[in-house]
Length: 182
Image 1 (cartoon, rainbow, N blue to C red):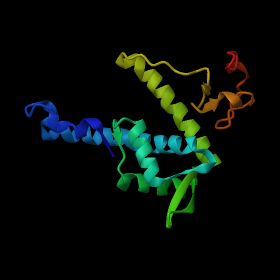
Image 2 (cartoon, rainbow, N blue to C red):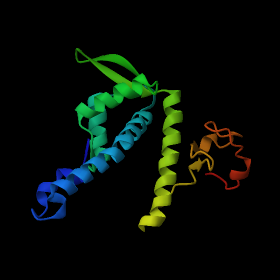
Image 3 (spheres, rainbow, N blue to C red):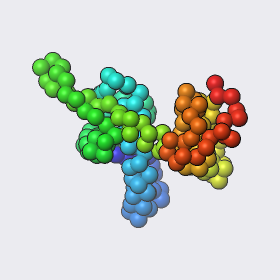
Image 4 (spheres, one colour):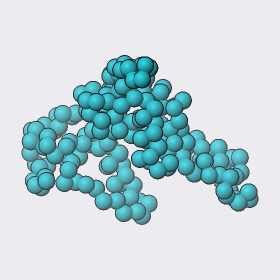
């Protein structure tokens, strides 16, 4: 898994700071740490979007490449271990289906996977929103579709706002549902 920046290093001036070994190593390690968690999150997101049909690994890799516009590249050698880990953690199910005489493993998200996805997405949303104030970027949240639990950052979809308590932490949500969710 690499970022697009590291793939384009050859396009920078050879004397640029990013071409120094110390600087480049630091950037590669930092980006890798950030991307590791994001890769799991976007993998869950993409599989969640496929619903009951599920998606097989190669198609998932192609969809991620297209959807991320090559900003994040998850090679198959990285994707399959992510899929195995998510499956082992009970966040994904896989089912073998035959296609043109070959077996493919189709992945779909479990209810636990959806809960973990919602929590991580809420956490990421709060983090990006908070960081945007520090790093001087403008982030527009789609808060008509979601409520982010103010206690634990769990993301609750608008069609589930009627629940009285946050599923993740148990916070009573009555006071936080004042806004009419569309």
